[in-house]
Length: 403
Image (cartoon, rainbow, N blue to C red):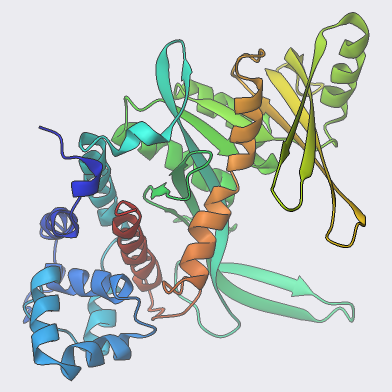
């Protein structure tokens, strides 16, 4: 029998993580502390939201009873020193973390947690929305490793500054109206072997979607992406893997927007308007004006994909407590391979805006709510920096499914 969502247990998650960690090969010929215990120690650092590895050590030294409880919770035989933890984790391939995320996701899937994440039914099949975005996680002019990207900046005086850093591509299962997200295994944006050019967010996405399909072959997904992804190669890649997309577009797509405008004359472009009011002491009035067009060309070239387009103008007005008239106006536009009609128009537009949850509920949480995403816990020479990110994401995953 599937476990009810409110019965999900941290202890079960730690069992899944620990059993996966035991499968990771240990590069050391002799070890005092098993590798899985070191990896669980790294998880504990972020689960306890310790600001440093040193504070993590002190957490176990301050109170014996608390120390014993934490050791049981995280399956720790011994607590390693910060130096030992860094030295060992530096040589672990961060790709070994991927099966852990897959098994944790299977756990929440069997517990029917995903039911509240259904974005929309397409052809009577539930689809889920996955928001994707890239972010920087480390920058330094002095510290670097073999996986660092290299950035050069030239100022107004033509002085060149070189910095080193790490980026990553993150993807989270999201749903409109839900603050809770479920993260997938992040994709490292690193200079690939034999390459001299920096890796990019798009090439990282190409690796991500291939692994995602392998890990979740039956999951029906609508990818929520920003304007960087509004191009033929990305759209083709998504469709080859059998997924849907909603991608933000800018009005610099001249052909697309001109064709949508021309469609207003022959009724190929259609309109829909909605008004609503909300609030108690201060009543706010919102007017949403939608415009949509199916099967329109994205670019001029002969191989350009045909896409479905929707945009929405949102106007919010109210009188403040002093009687002054206030107004906010926002505009959003998206392309999708979901056929648009009045039954799904609002959901598609709302889904496009839900992409911001990867920034607000994922990156912002990891940076500002105790996980310390941008803090350098240890850089190492090889994989240490990304392995700490992986442990942080696992701790974040476990926290999120308790919501």
